[in-house]
Amino acid sequence: QKARIGVTGLAVMGRNLARNLARHGHPVAVHNRTSARTKALVEEFGGEGTFLPAETPERFVESLERPRRLVVMVKAGGPTDAVIDEFAPLLEPGDMIVDGGNANFADTRRREAALRERGIHFVGTGVSGGEEGALLGPSIMPGGSAESYEALGPLLEDISAKVDGTPCCVHVGPDGAGHFVKMVHNGIEYADMQLIAEAYDLLRHAAGLAPAEIAEVFRTWNTGRLESYLIEITAEVLAHTDASTGKPFVDVVLDQAEQKGTGRWTVQTALDLGVPVGGIAEAVFARSVSGHAALREAARGLPGPSRTVMAGSGFADAVEKALYASKIVAYAQGFHEIQAGSAEYGWNIDLGAMATIWRGGCIIRARFLDRIRAAYEADPETPTLLTDDHFAEAVGDAQGAWREVVAAAARIGVPAPGFSTALAYYDSLRADRLPAALTQGQRDFFGAHTYRRTDRDGSFHTLWGGDRTEAGA
Ligand code: NBP
Figure 1 (tube, helix red, strand yellow):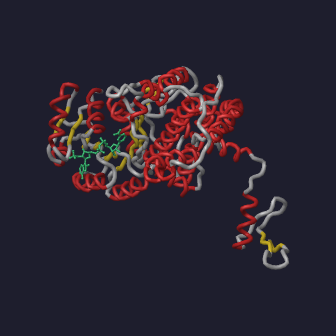
Figure 2: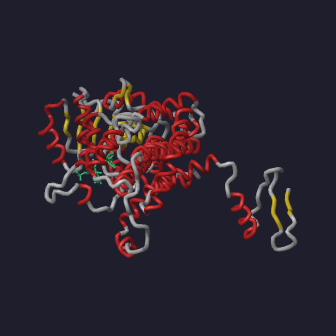
Figure 3: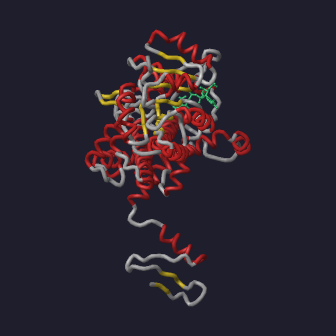
């Protein structure tokens, strides 16, 4: 018997993806550099379906039906290249290598081009949902050729999460498109988590609520428009009590957030593409600030207002509005980045389809994504989600409370970089005039960088060092 698909790299993600495939009735070949993992998988879970274990790359490749579908789930970076170098010589034109790791999309573009020369399809695929998603149904974002999706799509759609019967898997676009979208998904995830953390901090310090009480607030929010996996787990974490001290769990965890890199890539890429993603950038910076222990220690005694409890009733509702509005901004920025990446690399990404496949399986799964899908259905070319009827109305309704919350944060000295930057972005977009005019004046003054005028075409320069007449054409 041959396997329909194979998975190499059997740590948590690969093992669970292989089990997911087997549970769906697809005979799956399994391989890992260290064969103990392969044996353990078959011993523990062999009863779940048909596994074809292989100790060597040669046996692994031999056990696959043609064209071969080979999923690589190893640590991203060097290990992925090592595995490709090991397996590609064993493959034939028409075979497919699916990289399900969190690769940088630029690496994926490089690998895809190199393997295409040899006739091998390289399918950089975003997989979201962590360990549990991989087993029970992740959100899957495959890039690569349309031809490879014909052979892989049905399998991937079969094991993906489903929402209202629709698979959370769609062909994203050529070469690096899948990993690009996964990267932005993670960037949005960073922003979403940061905004939730700020909401918690404000409820705690401005409203004086205890973690268990805040958990209740989040539970209530989770029955409304903010309903999402992240809000749900936030309530769980806040309600948890540390067994050894009896204190709220959140009070015994070191307040230094770590990161693996996809948030940083999202921001670096946005800078390269010239897309403003302040909400995502502040979320990455907030984790970075938290980790600078010595810096924070040095600055701890700096003056600030007393953190007296000041918020009255209704504050939680205001925070809910600030959170919803800021979240809309973060998603608008993330989708703008996908739109820009798609244009830059000619990927032709369907933005509404991205919202659709993120509704289930992944970390940012939320009711809210239906709204984004509807916004792109109404206008696929919309320059920003903020002008969609639903979102414009929601933000319009929230903006008063949003401003109050940002002001309250500033008054009591609680950092709210996510809420603040989102509001500044909103106000920047809606402004009649921006002080960028002054910036251009300064640039022209010190560097003769020229400026354009509101009333005439052409570029102009004022002779600042001379008689200040204007030259231009
Ligand atoms: P890890 O990222 O911890 O990688 C461990 C696997 O890589 C093992 O199978 C290991 O083999 C293999 N490997 C390494 Br390390 N170097 C290798 C090499 N030179 N040649 C061959 N194999 C090598 O596993 P993971 O947490 O399951 O994640 C797998 C991928 O999925 C990563 O790219 C990750 O970013 C991505 N991802 C993870 C999550 C998550 O929630 N964990 C979610 C979404 C995506 P060994 O057993 O012989 O050491």
